[in-house]
Image (cartoon, rainbow, N blue to C red; front, top):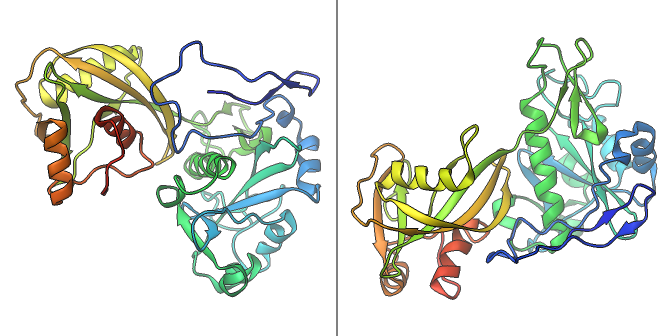
Length: 354
């Protein structure tokens, strides 16, 4: 996997390369291409100048959705001037001095966050909005369905249909908006915090504590046995027939390999070894980083925990294909890492999903 970067003097540097390529080398939500300019975004004047750049492009985020073309293949960007005018139509946009725009102090509506620069140094931003995606004022400002056939869609819908740059922009934007909306107050003293560093830090004006975006690591694993069958499970809250790979959050002080073994055993009673890292992708629902693994089972007797997992099955490739084709088994969505783990083991794409 390569990443575009910059040296301290702003010059482009060579992309980073994996010493070994993970088996899941291309994931729908792991296709970011922008340079996040982590050092320079600390300068508020520099970020403000980028917002004033006539080339600047911004993506509004509203109720977890972004504006896209009607065929879901293009992200609809707007200029900062358009988003600044949203305060006039009551969409909650504010100013740097009043980022809440007079709305509920717990809301992040109107705050803008710097996402990065593309290869031509065009700046990209996200702006958190409040309101209804069906608001005609928003449609008019964004071009309107009649003009460019704009619709609002969530990441699950467009994560796999957008081009690399746009997919990366949406993942970053949604993750930041989610974090800011949920972390408006200082965990140390309770005061209202303010976004800094282009939106990648919140700073408390009272006790000066800095708060950084939360990312919750979670393992997700496809387990196979000696007969090369895969192990899939169903949560109790899911409808009958909906299955996925096993997953769970990494606990404090826990190595990833231990988390794989613990989660599989806790949920199904199966013991595993040889955890192999396969790849990762963000899953901002609201703030997970999914770390994909393959693992080998050394036991096969299933004993589900009846809390998180209420049903688990060993499936051969023929079993899986027959269950999917009959509609008895629904696979995870196509943008999920769970789907890629299953299809990598299976050997080809499969149809049908939740």
